Image (cartoon, rainbow, N blue to C red; front, side, top):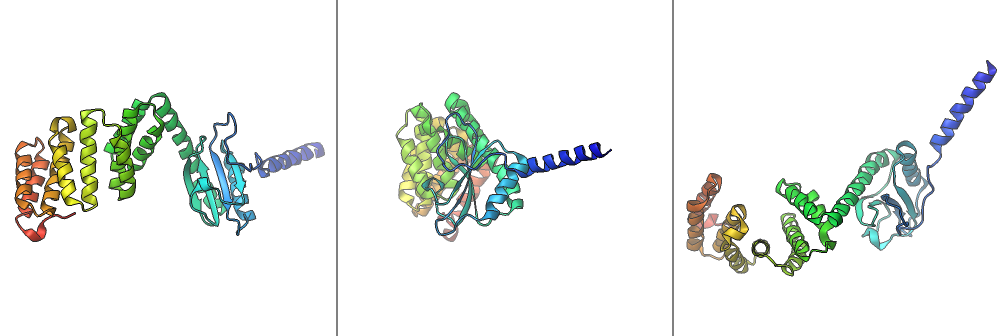
Length: 304
């Protein structure tokens, strides 16, 4: 009886010790380890604010309860690879060293348990995305393009960004044009300009050149360069077959707005009336007619 009781107590003690101990020691370097394909979790403080025991224990608890397949690193001083300095930051990198997720501020065990597993899984997704971009870049591009069409802007941005190192220059240029469009839709004009400059370097097909011209016109309009926008958008609208119907209609609507912003309401109305007559989409035709009617009242003329 006593032997059985003692054996049970010993097993419970052993289980408690195993659960309490960290599964792996903290590393001290962000550099990738040879052959290690795991995401990396970094806990870092500023030089003026040493790492507290609570933050370290919070991450230790994630390792004890979830045993994530990732390695972890402690740094007492911020590293340029994490971006802006912080008094305390928890970062997750994909295996090749790209920062995927970051959380700043005090770190409780509950917050770590909620946030870290999601961030680590996002790092694995990013790693798979980059691997696909290397092994089948065209399929990776098509996946990102579908995500963009469905409005999944973040997923599209990550997919196109993974193609930055593709060996196909034309594909890199196409990805840059899509990234310019995503940045523009997000309101990041500076990033849109940067990506568009990269896209301009690879205009090897009529469709790509037409899309670049459309994106440039949209960017110029967002920057209130209305005359330049009207010129670029007119050039894009002249390439209906290369653009495809949906983007041709987008170019015409944007062109009309740019013409109106330049004070050329008559030309804008003509652009819209032509679109309404030739569009195969009833919704587009109605939108074009409604915009044309609004231009008859100067105070309603679109300028943005």
